[in-house]
Image 1 (tube, one colour):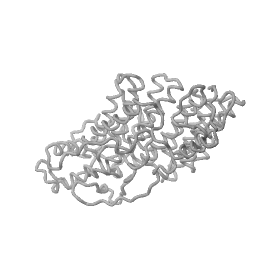
Image 2 (cartoon, helix red, strand yellow):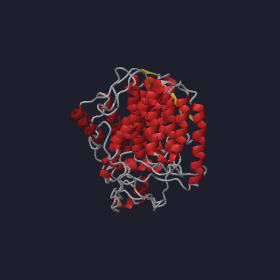
Image 3 (cartoon, helix red, strand yellow):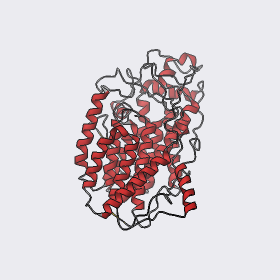
Image 4 (cartoon, one colour):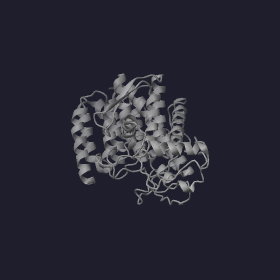
Length: 462
C-alpha cells in the first residue's frame, strides 16, 4: 500500500513542479516542493524531522537572499566558510540551489525528483555568470547548513518503555503495538532558543482534582466516536486540522500550507516571504523541541487510557467507560474509522497546539497585527474552506481541534498554545541570528582566524 502511495505522491510532485514554476516567487515554489517531500518520505514521517527540515530549508533560502544582497544579514555566520564571489549573484538561483541541497541531503531517496524540480526552477532564470555564481553560492549555503545541523540529535534512537502506572502514557489501546515516538526529541539542539527546557509548562492538574475531572468529562463527551454532543462543525474542525496519518506529511505540512495561503492572500513580496517563512519555521521547530521536552517530562496518559482506566484515578468525579473510542486522528482510509488512532506519544502538551501557537504568533508579529482575515483549505477535507478574522482565532481552533478528535485534554491545548507563543515571542524580540554557535561554524571560524580569510558578499539580482 505504501509503495503505491509513494509512486502516486512522486507523480503528483513531478506534475505539480511543471505548473508551480509559472510563479515568480522562488520562496513559495520551494516551500511547495518541500511540503510535498514531507508527504512522499517513507522513512522519517514524523513532526520532529518535518519541522527540522522545513526550518533548514527556509534558512537556506533566507540566507541565500541575504548573502546575495550587499548588506544582507544572514541567520548563520559564514565568515571564512564560503569562498569569495565577485560580481552579481542571482538570488533566485542561489535560493533554489540552497533549498535543493538541504532537501536532497535530508531525503536522499527523493533526490531524482528534487533534481527535476531544481532543473525546472533554474530553467526560469536567464543563463549567465550571475546564475552560475548563484548556484555555487546556494550549494555552499545548503551544504553549510546540513553540516551545522549534523549531530544535533535528530537521529538519536532511544526506545521508550511505558511504566504502566496510573496516569502515565501507554500505547493506544486500540493499537497496542504502537511504539512511542520522540522520547529524546526534547534533547535536539534548538535553532534559536537555548534549550528544550528554556520554556516549561505548569504542572498538570492532579488526577484527583475537580480541574482534571472537568477536562476528562469534556473530552469523554466531545471527543467520543459515538453518542457525542459534538456538533457537525466541531467534527469538521477536528478533521480539518488533523494531518496525523501517513502520507499527509505530518501537521508541519498543513502549517506550511497555512503560511503559503496567508502569504498569497496578503500579496507578499519574495523578500517578505523569505523572512516570514524562515522566522515561522524556526519558531515552530524550536517550539516542537520544547513541546516534546514537556511530553516526556510529564509522561501523561492520553484520553483513551484515562477513560478506560478511570476506576484507577481515585477521582469520584470521573467514571470509567471500558469501551470508549475517540473520534481519533483519521487513518489511511478516509471512508472508515476502523484505522483511526491516537498519536504515539504522551499528551501534555499538545504538539499541534504548540506548533500552532508558534506559527500564528509569528504571523501576528510579522504583519504587526492579529487582525488579518484569511481562508484555509485542508487535504483532510477536500472542498472545505474555513475562514478566520484573526490569527488568534485560527490558533485557538487548531488547538481545540484535538479535543474534538478525542486525543487531547483541554489543558494540553491551552498550555501548548502558550508555550508556542512564548517561543515565537522570544525569537521575534531578538536579532534573527543563530543563538547557539553550531559545531561547524565554531571550527570554521577558528580556521578563519588562523588563516585570516573571510567570505565576501556581493550585490544580488533576482
